[in-house]
Image 1: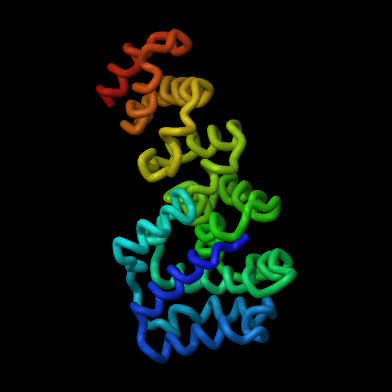
Image 2: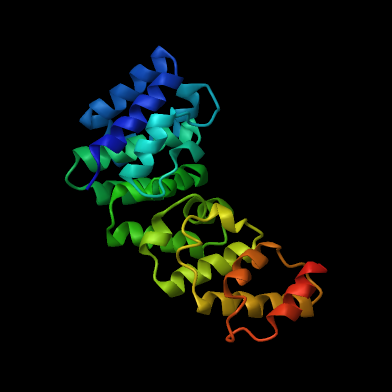
Length: 245
């Protein structure tokens, strides 16, 4: 169920950053059922956001709104979104808020839109609702070899931490490490630590070192959680090798 306060925070923050003409256009799209209920029309509007806004910047929220956002949806970080992404997500939220067949519409929109627009769609998933459709979208994104789609779910997004199984979570973290992303950019990495993941990363580090390939220094942060665990043999020796790379 869409939280009306989340919609309000997003809409008000957007309108404060854009000119009157762009604001009128956004209100037209979100206020006219023919603009947001037709997937082809809405996908065109989503593609038109950069042209209508004519500004490239991050979404700016005041301190109160940042705090409210984090309280509405634990881990939601709209301040990490671009203004263009925020408007596209607002359009998706309008579909969820005002139509009875939102998932059918959003499925078609996702198929019709381009890569950057799909990435924005995925970043908004924590606000859309916990349904199998959105869970499958996020799973497909992290399995993808397309970095913007993977990043949209894996980085600064609370959805995986709240909804992925342990196996899905562990594989996402391993992929993020192998692609040299920073663990601190993954929401929930400290709360969903587990010995199985530590063992997976341990084996990965050994393979990398054995093949004389670089190993991310991120791994020390994760291994240190299990530094006293007997399940990870020769940890000290491995960490010394990591320190030498």
